Length: 117
Image (cartoon, rainbow, N blue to C red; front, side, top):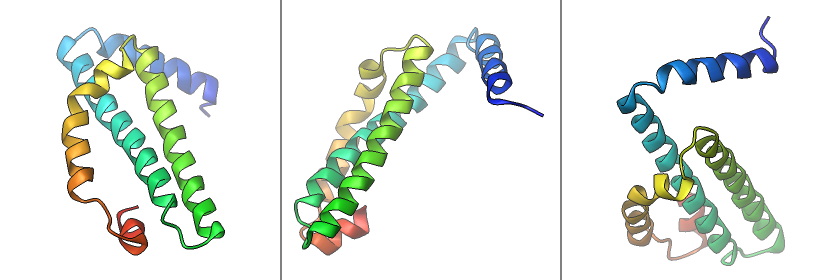
């Protein structure tokens, strides 16, 4: 049975072997960068949407969701750092497109914000 320690060792070994190929490493950094920026943008969007909440209970629930998105971002950022990639540089190519998408699909009210969440 694989334990967390052996799983981490296997992952490190697999990465060491796979990352030798530059195209593979670049693809992984791009994927993690896109996901990380998506999570960061989701955090910002949910935190902003919480301002439109009709009740404190709803505001707290959206804040909880925003917090979860930020924790996802942290895990992706940490993984980028572990593989010697600069998180901000990895996310930068995706910022304009994701920001434009969110700007063009901004909710006009609370219910639209929930659908987008």
